[in-house]
Length: 78
Image 1: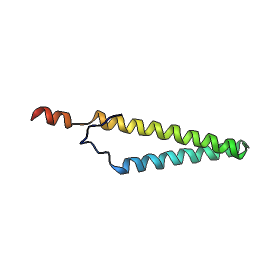
Image 2: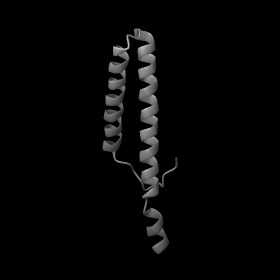
Image 3: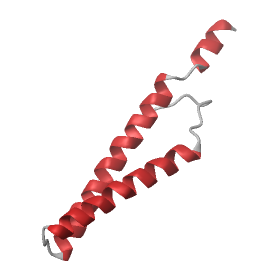
Image 4: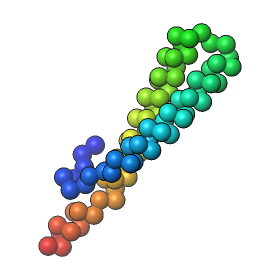
């Protein structure tokens, strides 16, 4: 997803994404532990959940940043 050169997403947004993704992956790890799944499939499923949720959050944040960019309006006024 291409952002305009003036748009710099703040670092805290990606920190929040990492924290939320980690919490969701941890809950997945705990739930799979209740189902008596062995260690390797449990780690694999948790990793897939972590990557899928993280990719979804990053895509959402980047699309919101792109949608709310006002740099095009400023250049059009000048």
